[in-house]
Image (tube, rainbow, N blue to C red; front, side):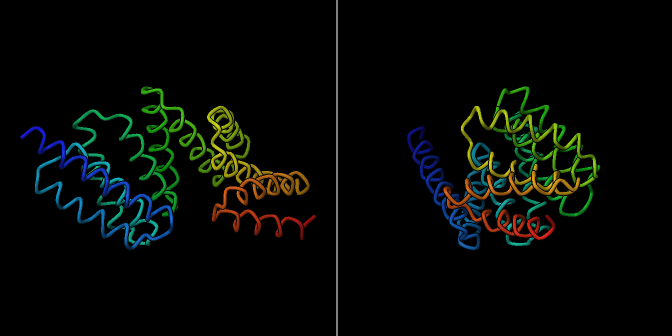
Length: 224
């Protein structure tokens, strides 16, 4: 029985990895199908060990597909299970997803609360990747509020960690955010330099966010 259960868990992990790979390639519809089938199977087996990770991934996929209602349902279920299991790392991930959805709904105060809680949990478990992500998200909220000094402080904290980890994609995204802050302050030369640095990194990585950085760079060049 033990080996059968272990085999089932291994098979489920493979399906989850396949779905994540599909998501990374931008095939969100197929990723959603695989993940929903896997979630149904795990529920049937009453396997709540892997289920939260699948639900959390599903929430991200549904959000990217524009199905915000279903994304919220999945991440809420994941967060409930992870709270019961005292899975602080997983809960930190879910709180950031919830915060992201709240930002999209322009509910910045609520988003700030979730990102702050995520940062606290990430700090408790000592996960630097999650700490960097939470700092970036807090920087985004501060920037949207027009609190640029606070935003820059959060982004710089995140940047320091991401440089330590060698997270080039995270570094590039932070550079883009910092460029937006400089642009909002009317410091267009500095903004252009940050956008160029971000764009260069994103192109090397082959990241789709390069299009955003290029658009930002072209816009700020017209204002110089």
